Image (cartoon, rainbow, N blue to C red):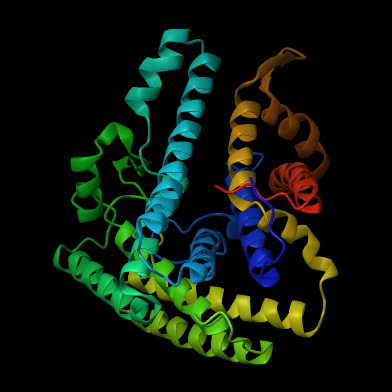
Amino acid sequence: MATQSKRLLALDVLRGITIAGMITVNNPGSWAHIYAPLRHAAWNGCTPTDLVFPFFMFVMGVAMFISYRKFDYRLTWRTFGKLLYRGALLVLIGWAINWFGIFCRTLSSGGSWADALWNNPIARLRFMGVLPRLGIVSFLGGLCLLAFKPKRAPWVAAVLLIVYCIIIGVTHSFELTADNIVARVDVAVLGDSHMYHMGGIAFDPEGLLSTVPCVAHVLLGVMAGSLIMPAEQKKEIDNWMKINRLFIFGSIIMMAGFLLDYAFPINKSLWSASYVLVTCGLASLLLGLLIWVIDICGKRRWSVFFESFGANPLFIFVLSGILSITMANIKFGFHGDRYSVWGFWYKVCMQPLFGDKLGSLVCALSLIAVLWAIGHILYRKKIYIKL
């Protein structure tokens, strides 16, 4: 836990938007009733939901560039230790939340304490996921930044994306099948029981091989950071120059991604190179827009809501996971039926008032409101919990 006196406000707001979006799409009242924009693309393509996670990873790259500026981007035992500590911490927290979910579901379904505490969680623990991916990418992306320096980040990102395209292309791994190279690597290394399953196939959308383009993704965020805050700490860039640079950078890579889509389709589950370029381009444009609205136009009142999320994003995300798992597994009887706390909130309270889909969305927004209240207290007290 630490306090900080100076933060890049537009970056906090963008980070807050992405975290609020991630929590919203992860916690509908009912998975059977979701508005189309709040669903992931089935395979190829990109919905608004498919933007929130890559936007956060882009912001991670920008923040990484700013954070390691005070170390002059030198790879030392101290900076290596910081990278390793944060990466390992995120992976372990991700595993702990996954374990907690299996533990609660086992007990809720009538399983024994032995199964809940040890047998089921160990046998079914998913090794990858959002937080483990962030941890691995944070470590590898930071290592590339410090080892090759910011000026070489574009070349490292390009090499990683080209190599990944070649791997996918040579192995013809464009479809969701058991022979997909991304799935085969994960099954061989992680094991079928420790993976996410899509369409009856062991395929993890946050798998090992698809981490390669994710590192390039973070490095594109590093490039954006270098455009708005130069490596030399004494130099300053005016806000109009920041916006111009972000808009040019974002437009170029976004158009490159749409053109690449014809050969390598935009696909979140594969984290394809076209998906990297398009989402990073859009994130760069949005960051430029926020700098214009907040820093040039001075329109800041609306952003307080998202600042509260952006100041402690991963802490709030972890808290959302714990709350949602707990509410989904505490069950009780009501008028002859058995409900979980979350199921009761949707079926008895929200669905009768708002209908199926809107009631499902309102449930997610009610969780957002609770988490915002917690985050806002921390924000007002200038408390930043680093994960």
